[in-house]
Image (cartoon, rainbow over all chains, first blue to last red; front, side):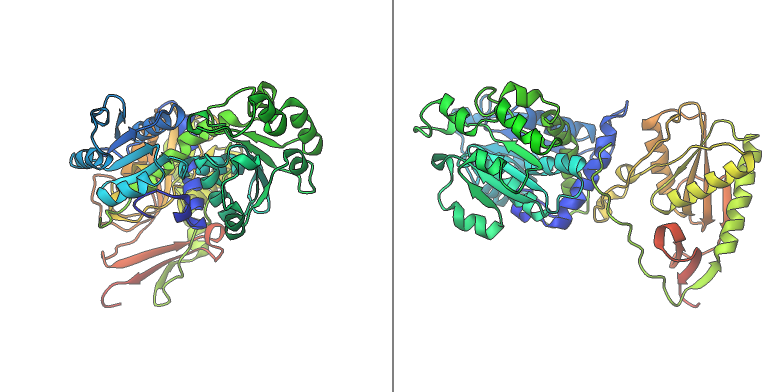
Length: 317
Length: 196
């Protein structure tokens, strides 16, 4: 296994299979009374979050603690970053404390790749700007696999703010590596530039009309709604929230239409949800929703990632 | 239950220069004797839980449990105990995905756990297994049954029930193959070493 996890593109099918198999064992640990493994005893993991997070940060922290590593959380507010320290100085300072892993979330795309070149520790990308979020893709794959079995030939539809979505970028890479067919849907204003050549390279389909995709010949096995990322939007990407919901929200009529075609269709959302905007409360609470499964899968998958990056042979830096 | 697939167990080919020390019928006889020993020692089958250590210990454990059932005429819970996360040599070898731990429904609290493995060597696997067990509950007693004891212990650990004591040198390799796990007939081979 490699030293860093920066991009989902680095993971081969064998790597992903191995992580998901480990995650399955880790999922069992979550159901035990004593949720503690000695595997990473004496290792130090720093969660350095330059951007806000609830589930990713807490699950990395819990995952590390359950494996007996010492985990420490740092955020931009309250660290020297707020005094103007550069990213490079910050991470090299942390690195000088001989930590074993740096879990980094940053608002700049490519930040993790840069950090990986600056430090000796393993770098894990917990979301960098609008680039990638590889552990999210792994936990989504794990959630899908635990419900659908082998993903070969399964159809996953990803809907929403593609331009700003790192979840979508990592998911397309991981899901297509596992053999799933992916269709991405967004309003033209939120479709990244040049997606056509990209879709051709990675082998996924694109569309603008959500209802046409959901009613298409290729019945979806899962629909993944993406969050409308208001904090990254400076211009007008859609006229009104209402109009976005009408065109691209997972509303009750759409859920009913989907269930009429496939009773077991899975509804996913990486969270946090804008209820009433990209997903209705009915959809989020429906029996088809696996949104909370995604959270508990996240713990198992992050334990598995920490195990694969940190437990093995010392690799030459 | 999560159902993400487990990797297929890999069985490297047997060393053709190896010498067979146990065949299928020897292994079956050993297991049968061990089953009787376990019952004798336990004065019956009360509270017995058989836990195999992956990968081949699981198959041996299931066979032992089936023999215990035959003798006693009632079900004996059997499961598996993966010890990967508890190993002390994780840093010295490439990472491998852990296998599944399956504890049968009655649990292990207050039970007599029979740990089953194919080869007892340094004792480090069993040390890890005891740690793993402690995280899962508190058995009344833990006993160890192994198919082959090849010596060279590095820790104060011994087996309660041994299929065959096999004196070996450290440079030799003991290879166990089981039909349910490897797809070839049961066999224990010994290979390598200097002048063999």
